[in-house]
Image 1 (cartoon, rainbow, N blue to C red):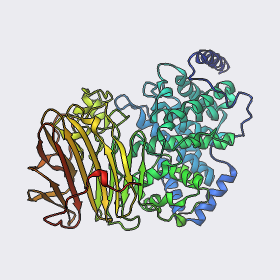
Image 2 (cartoon, rainbow, N blue to C red):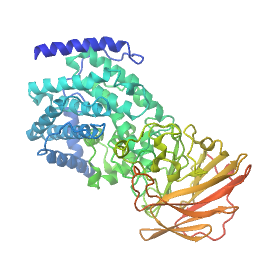
Image 3 (tube, rainbow, N blue to C red):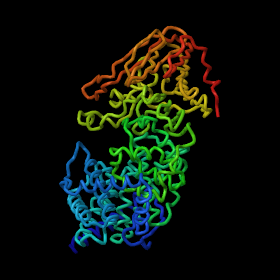
Image 4 (cartoon, rainbow, N blue to C red):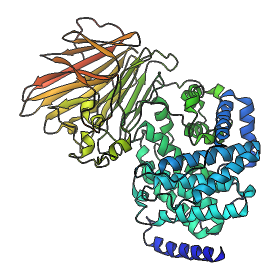
Amino acid sequence: MIQKRSFITGLCLVAMLLYRGVAIGQITVIDSSYKLPDHPRLLISAAKEKQIIAGVNADTGLRQIHQAILSGAGKMLNQPVLERVMIGKRLLDVSREALKRIYYLAYAYRITHDKKYIRRAEQEMLAVSAFKDWNPNHFLDVGEMTLGLAIGYDWLYHDLAVETRNTVSLAILEKGIMPSMDRRYNNWLNITNNWNQVCNTGITYGAIATFESHPALSATLVNRAIKSVVLPMKQYAPDGAYPEGYAYWEYGTSFNVMLISALESVFKQDFELSTQPGFLKTAGYMVNMTGPSGKPFNYSDSRAVAEFNPALFWFASKLKDPSLLWVSKKQVNEAKLLNNRLLPSAMLWANGISFSKANAPKAAFWIGNGTTPVVLMRSSWTDPLVTFVGFKGGSPATSHAHMDIGSFVMEAQGVRWAMDLGMQEYESLESKGIDLWNSRQDAQRWKIFRYNNLAHNTLSIDSAFQLVGGKGNFQSSSDKSNFMNAVVDMTTLYAGKLKKSHRGVALINKKTVLIRDEVETGDQGVTLRWSMVTPAVAKVLNAHTIELNSEGKKCYLFIETDGKIEVKQWPAAPVTSYDAPNPGTTIIGFTTQLKANSRKNISVFLTPEKPLLKRPATADLAAWPKN
């Protein structure tokens, strides 16, 4: 063992020398002389344990979360230990399960002191430490595995056998830290998406947990993370909208908060990370992204299912704003949602905030500019039957984006009438040879049915795809209660087809949703297609009206425009062998022919009330209320 340790120590020194040549603008906020607190040092302490117990005793919602963790830990006691089983190119499912098991078991042991939990955690830690590697070719797998091992090592340190501590510490070094310093695997240091947040967090936890074994190396890694993670954090500016959407907010932001929380717990500061523009505003984005039905606005690579977000507890505590837990307050009653692998973090971050104080947010309108602009409007926070609409801009070139610029979702009467099909599982495409991660204009990605504009609630011109190099930005918006609205300029998405494409979405009188398009053609005529994906049964009532039926309720789509239109329904069935099925859905809308050098204004109303046969002319977008 001593000989092996000497080899590893030498390897660390060589790696440090090599790393100095590839560091990304090295900064020093701590050095090897820094005196870290004793174990456990990451997130938890004796005082925090007492605070958790007090919260469990005082608050029903926190008690439900606590019981969910203990129940989950109990189910883990007799499960077989994890094995190194790859799915395609990923070990990620195993890494995530390892993180969940170790975190839940470590939490259960620290709060109950029942040794059955530490015995089981130790078995799991030794099992994954024995893996030949943690799959550095897909470094998310390493990041999550390192995080899990680091929490277990740190939280259980004084009660683990010395041999177990040595084995786990060595695994963190060899299979987590060292690959993170290899140019073949660490391109995530310089990118702006969730990979940066997740990988930096996992490696930083490993560095801090094992700081005594290699203080100079650990200090280097902490400094590196603080410098690197600013890159994705800049993407929250200016208002907190997360570029990659709902599902990746849960991923990237949760790990980002785990990183900040670790720095706060160990170094008593976060080195100004939380002050990055837009970051503290992003909790508002996530809360507003959830519709009255509990379903999210699932644009980009997101599923149309709710996520329980422990990170919201950190934001609620940091901002002293319990309303940020309004959605979480309802979710704790849905046991299936209390399955998040970071669930113990909610207990750590609650900091005395009670669910009983989590009143509804005050604002019914939220807008975020930035990489992927989005606006979210609703007529009420407390009535589950209200009207809700989400509307987005952005670019297909953004990480995990679809060709969905100008797309929207709409709910009324508890039904999502206008929906997003969401992501297709990656492995189902990668296993069939699809180049999913190339986003060039001619890439295979855009031939996937769910990913292009023909399967989204937006415009298509001559059945062509939106342009990857284009972007939709908000031109104006208003939170006026009887005419909430936002207007997006989508012209660059249709360059070469249209000279102008502006779309406005409004929530009128807290009930009706209006989608207005104003377009201008160039030197050639085009065919414009307006489409909307719906789970409802559609019935064409006349040349301008479609009746939607779902769950015994009705919604009406009324089209107001000059000239001839052709109302249509398109199937949402797979068009290739690799496309996923979309049962129970259809695409409704219409087509219209536009002459060269012409203008066209189209207003589409969605309302749970049957529309009048004749409506007054709708105001131009330029005349819409503005803040």
